[in-house]
Each structure stands twice: as C-alpha cells, then as structure tokens.
Image 1: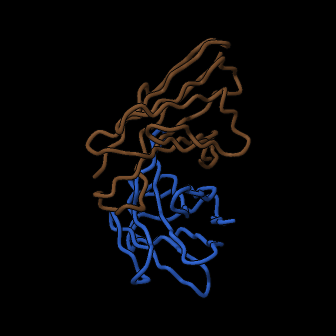
Image 2 (image 1 turned 180 degrees about the vertical axis):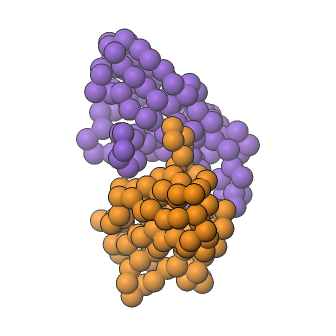
Length: 110
Length: 119
C-alpha cells in the first residue's frame, strides 16, 4: 500500500528564515508525489508535484521540493519564510486515489 | 488554474434529515470527481470516487447508502448525507482533475469544502 509520512505535527520558523517541511514516502514503483496547502476552513491548494524528471521541483509561492529516492523523501522547502505562509501543509501520493499524510502545521513568526 | 466550487460552504441540520452538497468544476469537464472527509485537526480521507454516468466507487468502510453520490453531468457531482447524525459532522471536500491545469493530468484540484454540523 502507498503511504506518506509527515513526522512533524508543527514547524516553527521566524520570518525571513528558510523553512523545511518533511515528508517521506512508501510507494511501490515510481511515486507520484504532491504538496498541498490548506488555510483555515478552506480546501486544499496545489503547490507542486513530482512525477518524473528533475529531482528539484519548483512550485507556487516560492516553494520547492526535493525528491530523494535513496532517502524516500520529498521535503518541502522555501528559502525565506513569510508570515502568510502559516498554514497546514499536506504531502500526498497517488494517481487515481490520493493518500495524504497527517499534515504539518507551519507557523511563521514575525 | 482549475477551479472547483462547492455549495453550500456551511450547513447546520437536525439529526435525521438529509443534506446535499454540490461540487462543480467551473471551467473544465471532469469525468471523475473525488469526495473526501476531514475531521478536525486530521488529514483527509477519501470517501468515494464519483464517475460521470456510472456508479460511484466507495472506499472500504464508507456506507454507500448513507453517502449517496450522483455524478449526473461532466461538471457536477453531488454528495447526499442521508439521515444525518451528529457523528456525520465533518468537513467534506471534493476534488477533480483538470488535464489542462498547471499541475497536469495527475493533479487533483480541490473545492473550498463544506462544513456540516448535525445537531
């Protein structure tokens, strides 16, 4: 069965500092990996995906993620965090069916 | 990008009544839509896959007679929670794939969600 794990319930970072939100996957074959962001009482917004190709994927709002096959990871990163980045972030895998991680709450302090 | 809408955004109903939630793809046609449920401070769980013109495919443990799904057109899927009970209170989110979207054919785009509260 496919799964993703987000080991951190919450990540705290100061505005202007780099941020990393971790995700590891367990997928047979080539993984389809996604990052979504959810603001309070809202649906999910697509940030980026990895299917094939370059291991470094660039997405919306300055976010990027690095696919690491040897470590089975797909960590979300941003060089300089903004207070407005504070939200709930979900890693997911799948094509026909998306399987989500448990989510990581990112809190960016001014 | 692809836009998916849901209506209503919030609904409060009495126990025993039925509630219908609509999911629409606004600028694209979706042969397949997905319905998820999200409990407070938890992740999304896929409930069912809605297929235009055919029966929905339900995930294990989801009661198909309780959560009726109809996908009558290429832009509309509805989820009806029948005989709702307080334990059905949750955040329901739909999604659809738009092959023309920035994320490609593999990416699901999500609606804003419907919060259901059953008293």
